[in-house]
Amino acid sequence: MSDHSNLPPSESDDEAPDGAAVFPLIPEELGVHPLFLAALHALIFFEGSDETVVHPAAAQEAAEYLTSYLQRLSGRDLQRLREDLDTIIGLGKDEQWPRQSLQYLKTFLADHGIGVKG
Image (cartoon, rainbow, N blue to C red; front, side):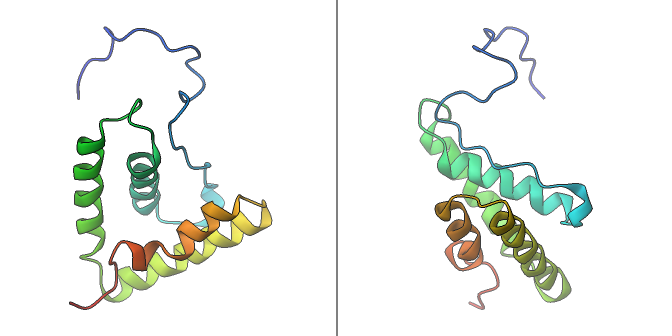
């Protein structure tokens, strides 16, 4: 990993900069697979952040690799991913997340070509 000690301090080290797409923290108690959560948070960051936050070409390349790994899922792993998405959608509805966030989750598999036989 690179050393970030030479980076200037942000306005607030506790907040993401304007233009950064950040997904809410998903409680551990929900039992959603942590590796899926890591990939989901990264994809949302890469796909939704402004170019002032992340370089567009780098973000696209990283998102494509993450997506390609998720596309390898099949069988029980794919079923688990579907169940985890349903769990997150349920949380989002309970917490009244923005409609756009819920729609992203509802169409996540289809939009990313996951679970589609080629």
